Image 1 (spheres, rainbow, N blue to C red):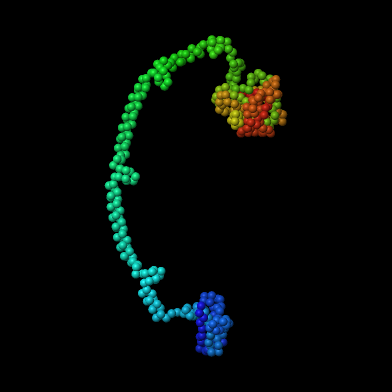
Image 2 (image 1 turned 90 degrees about the vertical axis):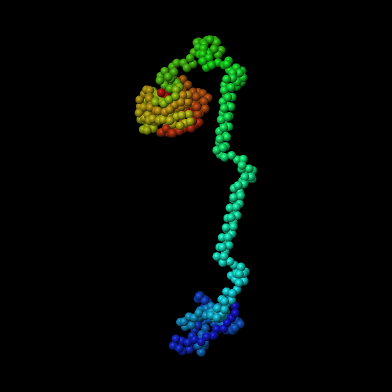
Length: 407
């Protein structure tokens, strides 16, 4: 920037020359001292602050611009060089010249080509009216066109919804009439129907019932049997139903021994009901009474083949007496399905529970080759005081053949 010379005379408020008064020059609107020179070429620096001379003059060289001069307790704004305010005449002349210019004004190449708002609106309105008239004409022509419209070769051959429904209804009626006639002919036909040479030769339901009845009554030469009257009844006697039971582990007459169950182990006895329905009780028996049952730790329950507990009841009071025990358990049973009666006992001296005689102690023999999840006599778990809500049948192990039945 250009360097300009500043030279001004200062007085004190009482009108005397301000000789030897300190002055400081700052950048405009900051407290940063600006650079001053002692020569016009800007090669010799001038101290800042500096003092007025003996005549009250303050002289220095500085780049043109805006500054603040602080002298004694006064402050003066300095506008030097191009920063100095222009005269009113110069401003008026510049504005007039600018107003008369039409080229490259405010980024506009030629202001003479601009349109007024009113003129632009008039042209826009005219263009809109022309476009609407053209669109109306095109739409009118399109509305009366019947060929190659919206991908339709000829709209004249289209049918209305009501017309199409009327034709469809008529076609359906004709098809139903034809089908009814064909079905009537088919129903009356007796030869070569559905692969049957002659339907008239087929037996009626009554004929079949009569033949089956005659077969059921026959006792000789039936299914290769010389005389069925001589066959024995497979179920034998006694049966669970003779005692009012749905199922039992075995005939109670063979439960001629007794043994202590393992305390805290869940003993299981498998049963398959002969009828479906709700079971109201489980029977089991004590041969030798126990002593001091553990309170709340003696249970009889019923589990299904998946191991889910269906019902349970506490039996603390049954351990200190002998004989047949009846434990009320209510559960819905299905004929032929596998269930386990669960017996969990804990006492200072456990009771002896009825079991089968003979090979009763050989648990693997009693269960034959059954898998763990189908054992007749098993145990599951240890150190139990309550019946688990479910067991894993695959974890069953062979155990004593205790007797149990369900009503």
